[in-house]
Image (tube, rainbow, N blue to C red; front, top):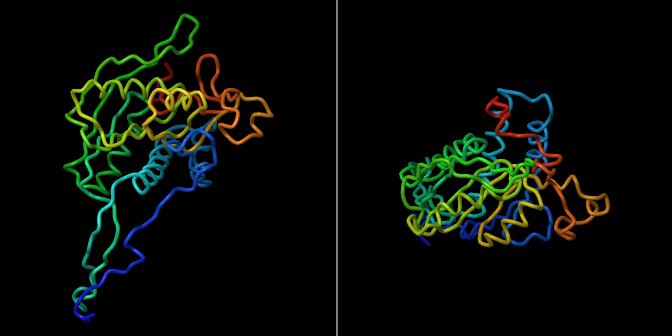
Length: 277
């Protein structure tokens, strides 16, 4: 081969990537990351006494880490050839490889109120990686609906600002606490009216999820891909906690009677906004 050409290196032809994950029995669309650094930072976020501005800093850092994993593992690829600075020295100064397809259309859903900061962090991250003209951030105002005993019955939609189609886009739902699955369901229902098209993937991205959340989402929205830093099942019995997650799924419990996560981190929407109502 001529020295004037720039041959590709076979090692970069196809780049396999799978995040480090905990073993579980919740199905192949569920990814619970095994990341000791993120778990340390998440522990600090959830710790009593952690307040602003540390709260927002940790949320942003954790979501940047999460979205890194999601993009690397889930987004489409393309073959690229990039001249490096060495192109001025030799025609072989070109890197060829398998890379994230920068033209991938993406829509990030900002769910008020706990999801606003995670959504902005996700939106900003994607704008660094992809072509900004293909990325959009939508806004949905959602809140828990409760019964007369304070138990969560679902999620109510009080307003929305959807900027267009999600057809063939990566639809991202960055909601920090996946407790019951009601919020994710409401978001998906809003886009499933037929008006907005069909996304290439729906990816729910959480800091913490529960077995109850996974039971709902995997049953009602089987195609949704779930990423989380931590699975909390802290109200399960000691013998259930000694089993692999999902092995005794029906006996796992992570929610109080008012549907707060245990061990959890309290109402993160309240903590982020310093508004305890």
